[in-house]
Image 1 (cartoon, rainbow over the protein chains, first blue to last red):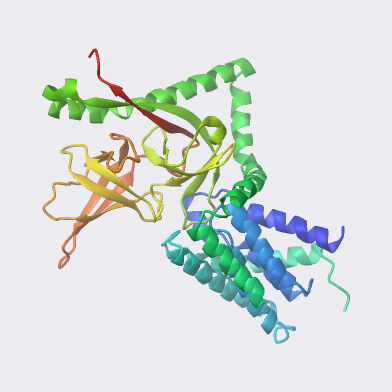
Image 2 (image 1 turned 60 degrees about the vertical axis):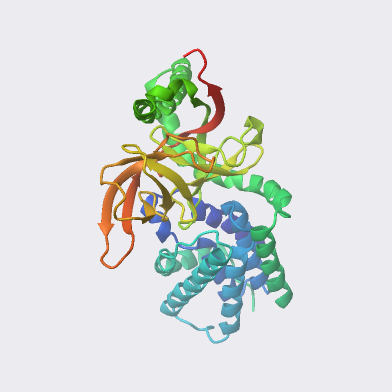
Length: 156
Length: 265
């Protein structure tokens, strides 16, 4: 299977993971799986259009969530833009660096989402911002190792 | 990059503050349904499994019809307590009043918003079933919320516990009115700006007051579980436990209201 098809399938699976019904309290702890995929794609240099793809994935998520169009696209796009700027420094990063990065980028994404929500008065609850960052850090090794097995890295 | 960022900001602004993108979002919303359908498969399979163990298909069909009928009757019964209280207060004026007669449509929950900050649900009735924006949604125990988006075959409803939602309520015991706000928790509502002298006690049942015209009068909203007077504050904090099973109910009712004169009673 070509890399692009694998990525598309992975995106569909990750979107489903992101909307899979969880019992009440566990919802708040759900990591941003789609953002983790975008981080993986950027870090492994799978495409030159990581920011654009992150925005597209965010837009897809907005459509599935049914909220305001573009808020996830902005959050993911800005997070990945920042990551792309740091990519050369993080070329030989260790796993715990990557975990830290997944945590920080999820926090950034959540803050951006919260800001858009507040500005558009869609939702004012701020209690959940930090929770997904912890689980994103927890899930990052599993996500990256699984995707490493499925996706062939580009030849340098 | 700047162009992309500007385009996304413009998209957010347009979608949040205008209706210009409504036709587009209506079409796109349909694309989300397969995702919800797949993610709901485990619970559907569990339901199918239960049905298969219980009986043959004819019995299952009959059972489903009876369950729907039961839900409708429960929905109607919910109003009886409030009506009884109202009858006591207004016995002499009964012949002059109007009573809301509600018809309901049974619907099934097909998706829950994964965003913990947004309490919305997807239901499997849409404009094809004459559902419209603003219709109240309830389960067998009380008010769940209201329809906020209608598509062809499905709709999105905002739950009463969403932090942007508020509804007018009254105490069943004495008719004192207030506003119940969502706080973003499925098991929690609060009454704000309640004066310490207002006669609201722990254990009081709250029902919709019908003010504002959005929700019909008399549907159970919740029970007062705590009343806290904070020193130095002008108002007391009142916590309410919702009557509806907001994060558990799968079969719901959409209310269609019609005013019926109490003629011949």
